[in-house]
Each structure stands twice: as C-alpha cells, then as structure tokens.
Length: 91
Image (cartoon, rainbow, N blue to C red; front, side, top):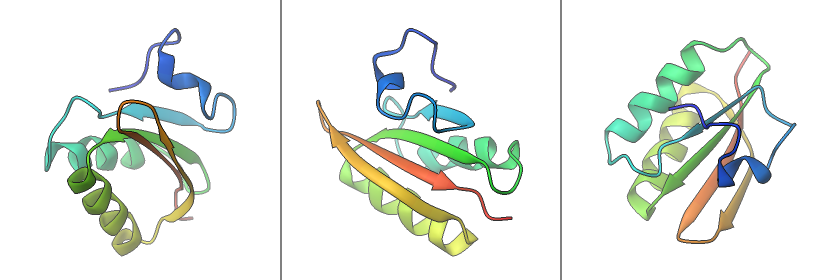
C-alpha cells in the first residue's frame, strides 16, 4: 500500500518520512494490518506517514500505535475526510 510518486497524497509530508502508506480505501481491521506491516519493515527512529479515512480507522490506528509504543508526531486533516498521521517508530 505504498503511495505512487504521483499520488495526490504525497504532498503533505513529502520529504519528512521514510515511508508513506495510503489505507484510505481499506476498512478496519485491515487498516491497521497494513500499518503494522509497514512498521515491521522499518527500523527504529524512522518516520511513517499514514493516510486514512474515517473516524473508526483513526481511533483504532491511533490507539494501537500508542499501545505498541510508537510516537505520534503530527496529525492533519485534509480534503475528502482524509486524515494523515505521522508516526515515529519506537527504537
């Protein structure tokens, strides 16, 4: 679920992240499955930008990230009910 280079979503945090994923077309619980897979492929201290849609996905992903010990660096709301979370993977 990595974003293509020409994706409209790559503009928010274009160079600040080590990885960017888009789960806007997925539904819970698959949203977190893709987020977890992305985090598992990363090293501690790297940043991940997550593009998601909907309150349920937002709450579940945010809660799960906190439980796993990752740090939520930033969150932004953009058009079409899309939320972007920027996460720092725990060391």
